Image (tube, rainbow, N blue to C red; front, side, top):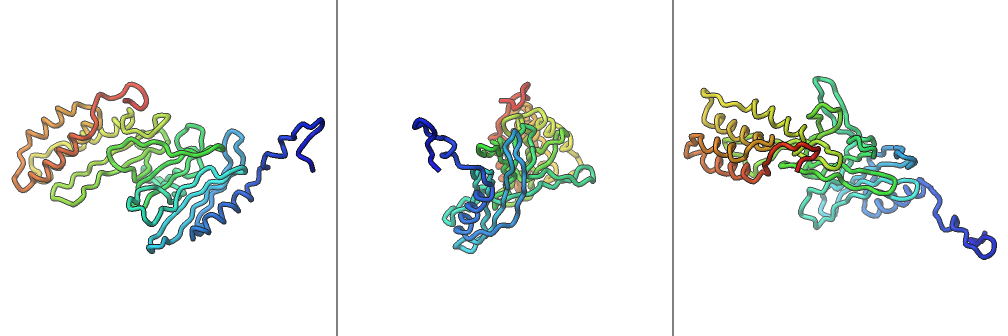
Length: 289
């Protein structure tokens, strides 16, 4: 059949590839097989706004160094709109999220809940895909019929959990700042980020309220040991700064603590960590500044 219509006019439809999800998946199968990957999970979805049927696929394999590797592919009827992984064996940083997370399981007051890949987790009308890195760090992708991109995340700690910290029924990201080496103080320095319409941020009102509650939970106890007293003081200062309160006041309160010589090095380290956290007044608009 000729691609030209009457009077020498080209028939543009002949140059447009017809929608075919099976054909796209066949291409994905060939590409991932070349990487030595095998399919472990498939999530059928229908993209919103007339985007049509699509498939979210998770893959696993072993690289040339014997390490487990993962990959994610999302195919529509017209193209592969998301491709994450596998990591190159020469890649030393293993914090890129390439493993498909079908659902982030949570415990909401004793009731199991799940934030599932393939649904709209942020409320922005797009399909979400959750991915995890080898180090446990989470990334949430925004997927449409035209392409995909990870939502930006602004946090003082790596995001490793999905929870609903502000009670709006949407997923929020939570993580804990882990020390390079354990010490006798070992405070729990966690952070939370809620979605502000564009990104996950710890400078939203919901995230600030999360930290404000933890300031109260870290009240001092005169009967506590030096380790516990200083741990609570550090946690209190950390959450106060992330709640949008004065960093200078938080550091001043820390400086007033009596620190035994055996704890001084660890204490000074955590003071430095808190000093590096961005401070500022609580935002009046979603996302803050």
